[in-house]
Every structure is written in structure tokens, then in C-alpha cells.
Image (cartoon, rainbow, N blue to C red; front, top):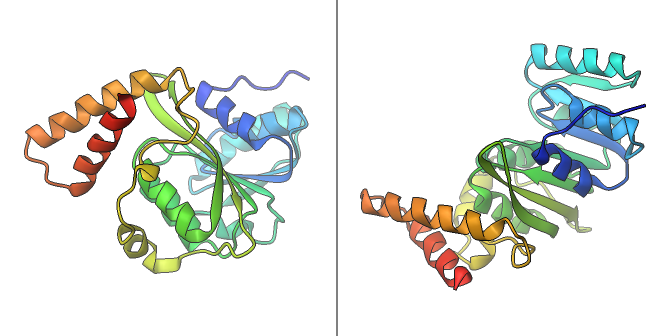
Length: 227
């Protein structure tokens, strides 16, 4: 059976999933990622999670069209999937702050994560470091005129959730180039354009009086990397 067509962003997320037992897509919207993963045999089982009932209804209709037995969870975040035996969790298209919040407030640590934030990516990288996840893949891509970063990470044996104090812990980490440049971007053909546009935006923010030290740190890092 032919699978639903995916945007470049979701296709990258699916590629990073690889093959898994139970897949959870948090913020599933139309459910295309889950349905596609099942149709293609990438996931044996999929759980679609969304805080929006209309979005879950769309996912349910799509699953019925493709005859996929999709598990639906009307919830905010990962906690509702604690009994689903999730092997890989996907959070694609949210900001970095929301992505980190979902991970921090979950009641368990999924063994594998595929994250595709559209901003505040440094927050996600900092969170993963503190929570005990190893980043396996990390690269930027453009889709529909927007930039995203796709990250695949694996939980270490001592991986943990950070709870309510996650943001203070993340903010306390010293600045490092590791937070601003993905490990796979040196050979990524999209990165030069991303870097150029991002540098222009950061320079504009500073010229308008922005004094956030993270802005200056990211600009310095990207300039060094672009040389």
C-alpha cells in the first residue's frame, strides 16, 4: 500500500527513526508520521498523541483510510504513553523550549528520541546533555521556507527526566559551541545557507539593542564555524 506523502521535515524525522517497535509521535497533528511509519514497516505499532481533539480526529481518519491500528492519546506530552512501551518518541515542529518541557515533565525516558525543533535548538541540546542522552545525529534542514534541526538521540543507562527545575538546570550550563552547531553539519549542504541567514538575524538583533548573552555567544560560534 502506498504511504501518505510527507514534508521534508517529517521525512527526515522518519528517516532518523530507522526501525522501531512502538513509535510515539507527540504533537501528531494529522497523524501522517505514525501512519507512514506503520505502512512502511518502520514501526510495528504507533501511538499518536496530541492535546488537540480535532487533530486526533484527523489522525484517526487517516489511520482508517490506510487500515492502520493507530493508538490515540488525547494528552499534553509523553506521560499518557507511559504504559505503551514506547521505544522511540518523536517530537517534531515545536520550539525547543516546549520540546524540553515535554521531555522534562514526562514520567519516563524513551530509549530513543527524534526531535525536530524549529527554534531554541540550543535548549534541546543542553537538555539532552543533562538528561543523559547521547546525540547520534544532528543536522539542519529547510522545509517550506523554514529552518529546522533534526536530532536523533539515545538514552544512556542513567538517563533521567529533569522535572520542574529543568529550565534552571539548562540555563546554568556554560556556553559552548556544542549548543549551537550540530555535529553533522560540517558536511551538510544546507548548513552554509542556514549559517548565513542565522548570522544576519543575530547581527540584526544585536544592532537593535538585544543584550542576551546567548545571542552573542551563538553569533560568535557560527562566525567561527563559517570561516
